[in-house]
Image 1: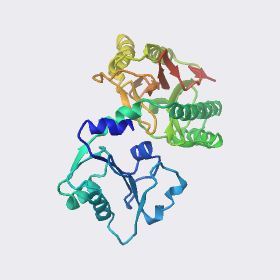
Image 2: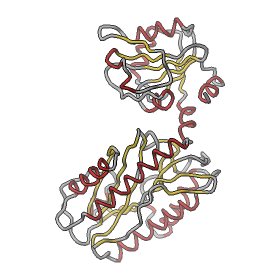
Image 3: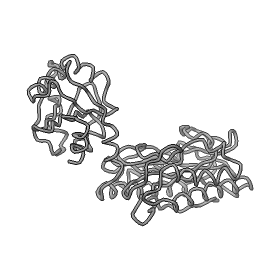
Image 4: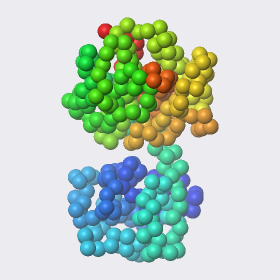
Length: 356
């Protein structure tokens, strides 16, 4: 396992994983964080073990590669059980790697039983592995993107005077389910509310001349998609048309710039330069994009200061936007794969400025 090789270089003796995407990525067992602790201990010179509550004895029907299962019962202390296993494996005075999202309280409870263990942050190692996707991961992301495109297209086709943001959001989610995905999010914003990048859909009704912004993502086998399209419902006003074209040009320029070896910050820069040159730099208020996979936001981040070079197999969003307070906002977002030959857009929904 590549992760083990990298951690040994840091003098780490074992890896301790907690519920969430890193546990799934490294063991094949997906379970969410709850009041019942679940842990995966992977010692580098001994047999790995999953420590699970009795309720999860069957591992939810999943088949992780770890076959040694330790069960704890409701009246037992799972941290004491985990600590005893660590001691029995000769790790009582070891360095154990954990990721930054490990529950702080759980680590502190383990420390009471393991005063000579040093818990080492190995988040950067796991992130470096997860950033580059396997063909199987790419296939799942691509399927999620395809379903999201179908759902957003159906939502745009449903637009009519008086329909609400929430009603359109429900259409997006229902279409995702119909095509076999789980909805992750479906934010629909009309008019002046499209200038609020992280607003939630409301009962605001659609009127002719409104901006319609739909930001949606689906989940397929734990992998995410992310797509935003913005259209004008009716004939675009000149200002709406001008800004839509600026954002579209920034989106396309950044996509075409993608290739292995390019620093993440440079992709952000080429898009930002276009928006800056048109006088709207102050209204582009977020990074250009983020990695996507087991989480909707993960490494790499396309932002100033991130000199991480792109690699073939990385998946991320490109989503320039301009937000004019109390007027409207426009964002155009795609999920993109970096390949040896450049970029491949996984969200294939057409770019349409307006719809009547």
